[in-house]
Length: 331
Image 1 (cartoon, helix red, strand yellow):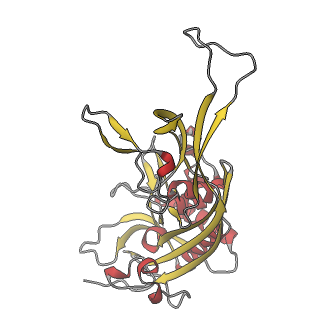
Image 2: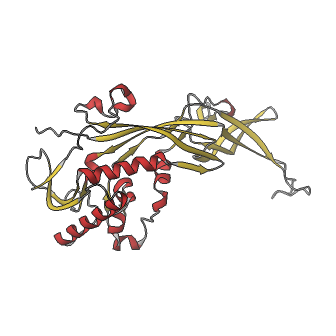
Image 3: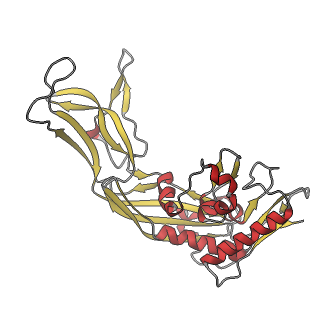
């Protein structure tokens, strides 16, 4: 079996700081204590908490017992920002509606973007897709500065009436809020998924349809131009071939596609790390910004080297000391 050598992934650890929650779950049904009596409510605003469920069991009659939000342990069920939220804000400057009919006629514009090359996409109408080479974990808070707040919403001086004709009482609502936050998150950019763009429908991963080889050559030129617009100094290049075969394959039956050379891969990786360093989120009366990242150019050859930046940080390589692995060749 042929072994593929070189840097197989670029992994990273991100440390972010902020204040308040920026990623919410919305209204949650809970039980609170009002004037000495437990009352079920559904107007409690709850941010995303890792492993939290508001139900702690069931009564003998089958009805659920709800946890009281003021008793949440924020170390056991920490605040987090979902990976989907992080990705949304990373690529928000390249907003695209994948449901738009215009996309089908302009797939080359989508592919020649960071959204197309790094975030990935699925076009429902044509079933074209590009699997994202960027893996992200949720960003999890380390401080646990959560707080339960119960508030009252006062009405007008003139009492309103309910449907039954009785006077409306002052409404109660509550929120789980946070003070200062510190998040840790991890990610990885797969070289195999980044460097190859399939233009064939044989393996259900066609990024876009082409009618003839000339279209593939033209698309490769567009990709080269886009990557050079990010960094014109390096010799970045995208190359089309009608039969790219993954190294080590028993048969030479491959697929039409585009392969990015090492310089092009490097440009896209550096740009992805840069937008991650600049990431900031301000929404829902909270904010977060990335303070620092640690990078591992991972050329490990055994399974336990995967994401070693998380479990064995002493073994990482913070500098690029070799070439990126090449998984495909034109035959």
